[in-house]
Amino acid sequence: MHASEYLELNARHDPANAERLGEPGADPTAFVSTLRSIQAGAAADGRPWPETHLRPGRRMQLADADCALAGLTVVQEMLLAAERTRQNGPSHEDVGERAMEGMMMACLALTAQVSACLHVRS
Image (cartoon, rainbow, N blue to C red):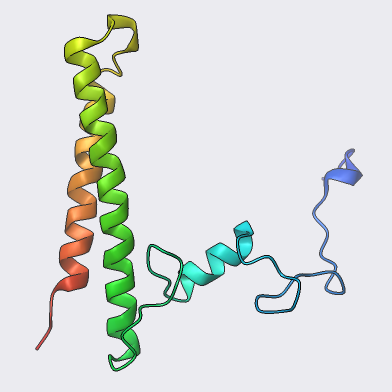
C-alpha cells in the first residue's frame, strides 16, 4: 500500500481551530451544531423538550416522536403531491410506482417510530 497521491485531500484535525458547541461565536444553525443538538434530544424545532418535570429519557422519547411526526408530515405532503401529479399532471413528471411505494414505506416506518416513542412502559 502506498501513500495517497492527493495529499491535500486527506482529512486533518486541528483542535486549536475546532469549533465547540456552546462556545461564543459558534453558529447554532451550523450543520455540526445542529447534529449535536439533535443527538442531545432536540425536538423538531431544535430546542430540548420543554417539560422539565419529566425524566430525561422520557424527554428524549417525546423529542424523537416530535421529530418523527415532523418527518411524517413532510413525507405525506410529498406523497400527496406525487399522487396529484400522477392523476392530473404531465406523464413525464410522474415519480413512478417505486417512489410512491418508498414514500408509503417511509410513512409506515415513521408511524412505527412515533408509536414506539409514545408507548408508556409500566
